[in-house]
Length: 103
Image: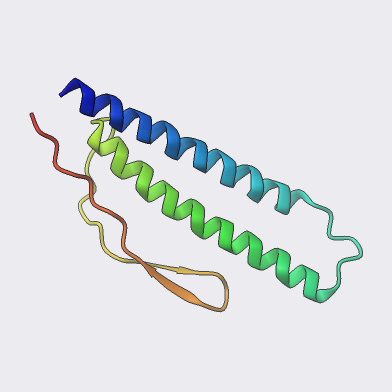
């Protein structure tokens, strides 16, 4: 039982590192000066920001499921499909449900 909890905590730490890495990339792109950018470069920058934001939403759902499994958060009432958009495309994303905990 204790071994499983340590493995879940290690997964949570790994996921948090992924979120930190994505946030850093998001802020680097967002804070970069757009002076002298062509319309094409501005479009690429916006697409990159939108993609990173979608990735962060996915990470947040996974972190929530891990937090429920470690018993740091309460289970949500619904884990319905979410529609994510990057401005011109839509993606359907089904958040994973936490695994039932054995007590």
